[in-house]
Picture 1: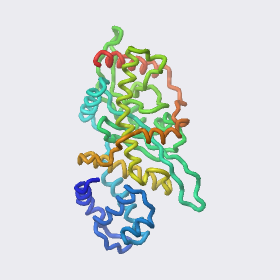
Picture 2 (picture 1 turned 90 degrees about the horizontal axis):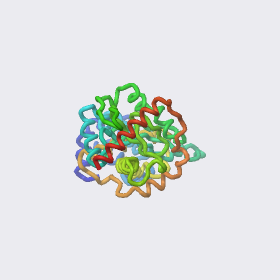
Picture 3 (picture 1 turned 135 degrees about the vertical axis):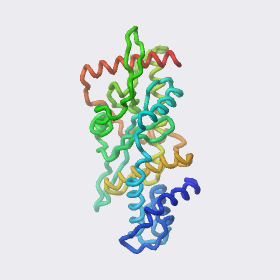
Picture 4 (picture 1 turned 90 degrees about the vertical axis):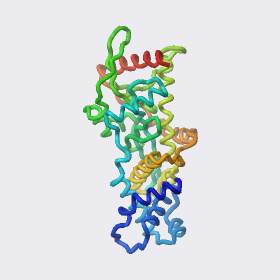
Length: 327
């Protein structure tokens, strides 16, 4: 991050980091922040951090834990699903890029390898994080700690995001009226499934199959638009792996790895607020290759109710017509 961003963070976090300690640290808030950020940014182990900063390993661990706790407790509002008024601007930005109307973000699931530090260490186990991302790579929602060998569809359906949308707490603005083959269709706010294995739902759009998307068809135009919306979500997930502590196996207990994911996600949004793009991934090919190892878990293994599927098919067909008309 830029030096100006570090100074800004230090000013925000100083009263929260400069608290009564279980150990006499005698460290300034800036030093504590530096130690914590160094672990997150570089991913170096604690003995190396201890040597670099001239502090005991126990102090280095405390500073990292303290930073993650402060971020995930006091600054989690940096990641919050937009209210109905704010969602309007989110969907307008996406529509300007893709011609997809009323789209409120992209759903994407990414996985991190976690290795328990027990002796002997356990085999690496994937831990999944479910993200919702807008067109500017801002994270609107993050939930981490899912068993990484669960399918994307099962992770979605076990998440609070799914429950909130199904219950009408989120994505609850009045629908847009649109015509499809002479029939008026209510198109409500929706997300795009940014990966394989997501179900088609009235509020979750996924691409048509290759067989359905003939050259020059509405379906092909819709799929192209979907592909464009996915790019910021993939770039955001790749950017999280730019934090050294998440790049490669995380040698920590799962709950600590989840805290790292949360802290790095919050910092990701904080940097974007400052227009500091230094942590944004410049390319996504490496991330996509890395995630290929989890392809077998990204499968659709849950069936929808027929009435729900039929409603979603009508909405998707209507959106495809609108995209083709406006593109």
